[in-house]
Image (cartoon, rainbow, N blue to C red):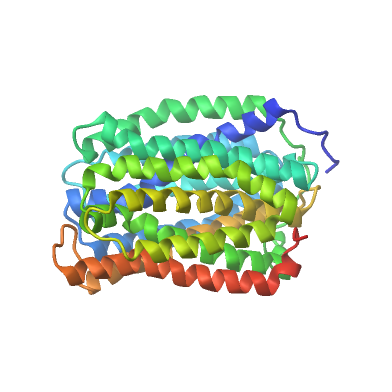
Length: 415
């Protein structure tokens, strides 16, 4: 594929707009669904965790295939448009379930929503890698996408409280609002960002395996997976932590909004730091910040709303680096031509989904096994919750930081 001309600012922004509804959809899937089905509909944490694990692993193995389909056809836009109705209908069913909804309902709707999300997301990410003409422009493209994505999660965090007198009502109304939001954003992105030309490339299915021979790609996948698990464990348990450790359930929406707003505000800082030090060094800096912040979170107790708000700001800033820098490093590895971008981002999404699945599938049953249940009032149950919420991410981030330091010269983008 020939090199593309430099992108105008409007094109970069138009590409990023679709990141808003995709992130808007992702937050309920990973944060609200566990509590909605375990708290409001009465399923046990172990059952919900097992369903999340099974559905997401099944969903994850389809991601490389979706990436190959986009590479093979060279036409990402039509595949994205085709998958959006499945995403929309799946979200509506998940967030506005009937009172009789049980494990089967949760499983089927998760598969539908996640399959639609995957087809859109894999090709959207690969398209971004193909759009940019150099490392600095790739960082701009990724930052645009993740910046709009953070705006999406801020809206998803705040709207359930605003739209309903209780969380379940707010989620149902938010699901209906998601439909026009997705349609509008898709129209802006698909018409405002330049489509890459790849028709007739004829990428063979074997290309899915060939990209795994790239050692630096495998190293980056390992680090990305560890970081994904470190982020997904608190994402799956934060509402329980705010309810039963901090003791302020009414503050959940504002605290989540602060977290994601801090992530959006921190994106320009990480981009500048990446320009100065290199993307890998900037990413390691964010890992150190996360370790310190979650270690502090373990010490909190009832009423520590202000301290937890500060933690949300600092951990949110670290989130901005986790969102923007790893895919920018991957885009640098792929190169300006974008060869195999769909295959790489297919495996990328697979690792993201597996890490999320493992985090939810292990953290929720672990809490169940340690004696925690939503609304628990015993000190031992609350300490178990705090340990899973804070110390598990600290351990994973420490491992990721050590490996990043060891591989820093092989990953690239380090000055």
